[in-house]
Structure formats: structure tokens, C-alpha cells
Length: 414
Ligand SMILES: Cc1ncc(COP(=O)(O)O)c(C=O)c1O
Image (cartoon, rainbow, N blue to C red; front, side, top):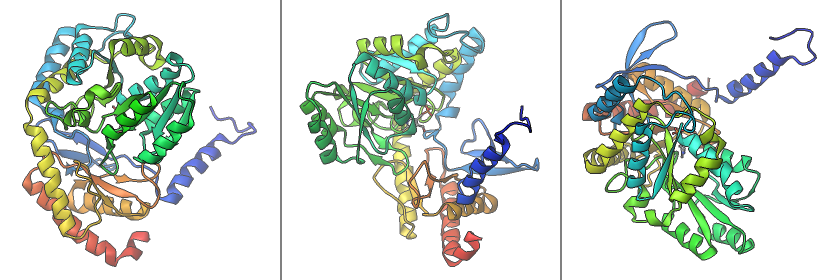
């Protein structure tokens, strides 16, 4: 409760914090969407005045449309009918079910590791694992790519151990940092296979070579790659036949697999130790059995059917080619992510609003701190369920708005 007699005006502090975001044009507004099973990427936008507008989602991370795949939905229905809603406990106290065990076996097999551990999300998996590792390897130094996801940064920050930040994908800098430390100190290199905002790849093989040379463990976040890369969807490490060189793989069940949750896959000993020491694994209710069942069905499907993976890559290539042909400043590192750099938070928001209001195209503006200031962008995520007609509407809309906005920077700044 806020007491007017109090020496600190808490409400004013909140206003100040929020106003800072408004002033910089990076106050986040969530749009209220209702996804429609079987019709994704089509959805309904519920406006604040209660009215509804049909939209096409172009910024989701249900990269392959697995969130509405019949095999996933059937597994979830079956599990919910069989077991009810929640798991009813932490993994340790009554919350480990056959569904959790099956999902972990599916994940271990996907990554050709001895074991896997499921967490509430990949955010929690990163944070919990990286904050726990110094307890397992006293004196551990973590070498972290400067563009690693917030969940890795949080885990590394909180763990009380030593850290070194290497410039993004800069192997010479990483080598320099590794060489400067005592060879007898335990070390771990943490990085990503696909960096989600630029869509560029981490140099996995070269980092594994450095890890071998300096006796370091490797930790790879494959959140934006699992399900989408590799012959069975095991990520870029599988595609490049490097899985065996990664000590801990982190992935999500909420993006290409279309459900919810996160995990690590590693040796049995590593998983056993993290399972036993990580508060973020131990002291929380396990994911609902139906969620585990849906995720397992999705992984199993994508292991044997590469059709969606291939269509996904084709769609990304087509969209990039078409946007490039119009002269738009897109970043293209050959992945499935299509960022169009606008370079200013207010302009990005205006473009995003115009796409939504005029064309029913939903693409959320991406601002600092998710990306560096001056690189604000629209991040498009074409999927196998976006049809040719939807792509035409998007390309034409971008063409019209980009020219309009170039001529009307004043209007956009207003
Ligand atoms: C690189 C990376 N790692 C981890 C996560 C967290 O994944 P989850 O949504 O499962 O928490 C994200 C989420 O966007 C991410 O981009």
C-alpha cells in the first residue's frame, strides 16, 4: 500500500522509470492476439476498445507451425485426459511423471547425449545451469560471447564466479582471454549457435578447437536452431556434425517445437549434478504432463520428417530475396531470421503500427536493450505456414511504407 506520509514517493519513482522508456520511444506495448488453431499465422487482434481485426503474425517464434500440428495436439489431448492438468509437484516431490521421463529420453536421443533435464523454460535452463556450474567446478571461469542471451548473462552474473566477455564471434579475442588465465583453472565457453536478432551463426567448430586447446568445457545455446537445423532437428551442432564436441546443449521446447519449456542435454553425470544442485530446477513445480507429452510428440515428429524444416528455409530465402530486391536494409547471414534495420526506436514503432493498422501485418518493433541502440529493427520470421499470398501482402506493404517513410521522416518523428 502507498502511504502519503512515507519519505519515499514510490509512485513518483515508478512514473520516472516508465517515463524514461516513453521518452526514448522504447516503452513496450503488448498487442492482444488470439491465435486460431489450424489457421496460424492468421490470428485476431483484440483492440483496447473491444473491437477485433484479423491479422497475420510475422514475428512469432513458432517457427515451423508446430503449435498447431495434429500430432502435438493429439498427444496433449491424450495426456490431459489421462492425467489432468498440472504435475502436482516439483520433480523431487511427486512431480516426475512418465511424460517427463519420456521427454528427457527423447531429448537425450535428439542430441545424442546420455541424458537431458527439462526446466520450466530455456531461460530458466540457462540461468539455473550457468549459475550452478561454479558450485560443481570451484574456481570456474566462464568465457561468454558479448551477444549471449539475457538468460545466460543473468546466470553468469549471479553465480559469483569469474567471467570474461569476448567480442561477438571474435576467436582471436577469445583465444587471448583463454591464454591469459591459469591453465589449471576450470573453464567453460558459453555461446549460441544462431544469434536470434541478427540471425548469424556462432563459429562452433573453431570454438570447440579452442576449448580443446585450453581444456575448457563448451556450453551451446541452440534455442533458435533446435527443430530447424540438422537432419533430425538437433540444431546447428547436429548439422555440422559437432554434437559430440559440445558438453552442454541448451534448447527450448517453446519455439520450433511449438509447445513450452526448456532443457539441457549433456552427460549423465553433468545432468545428475545440475539436477542435484540447481535451485532453478529443484525448487519449482515441474511442467504439466500434457506439455511434456506435446513437446515429446513434436520432437519425435521433426526427427523423422524434414519437410517443414526444408520449407522453412525456402520461405526465408524467398522473403530475403524479395526484400533485398526492393533495396531494404536486411541482414542476411543465411539463417531463417529476417531482420530489417530501421535504426531508430520511434521510426520502428511507427512502421510497425502502420503495418498493423493498414495491412493487418503484425511485426513487433525490436528495441534496446534487446538490440544495440541505433540498430532498432523489424524482425520477420517467415514459416512454412505463411503462404505465397501472405508473403505478397507483406512485400507490397513494406515497399509502400518504406518509400512513404523515407519521404516522411518528419511525420514519423512527430
Ligand atoms: C538465445 C535464447 N536463449 C534462451 C531463450 C529463452 O527461451 P525460452 O523462451 O524457452 O525461455 C531465448 C528466448 O527468446 C533466446 O532467444
